[in-house]
Image (tube, rainbow, N blue to C red; front, side, top):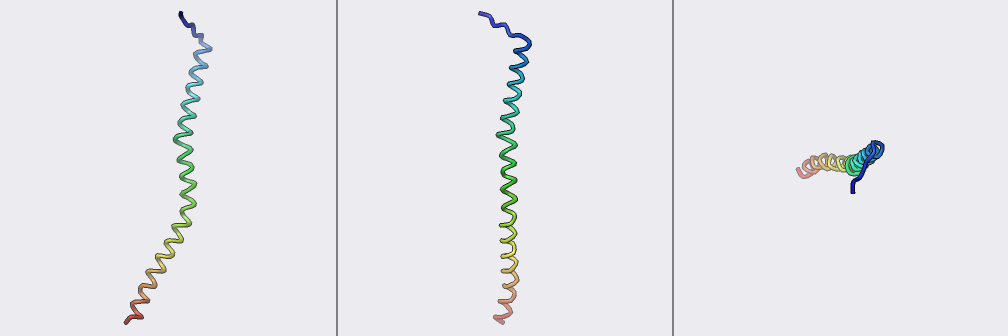
Length: 69
């Protein structure tokens, strides 16, 4: 049994394979990276608040040593 693949069918199969590769690259590579970038922007405000607390603690540390003297 021999299969005859026409030029039109061969182009359709190649196009389907290319579309599958592009879909896999987008769904496993680009979209997860984009989601992590969105999460990183929300973490920036948390880190800024944490930095403010650390700065306040450092400033207060100097005041406590003056009070102890």
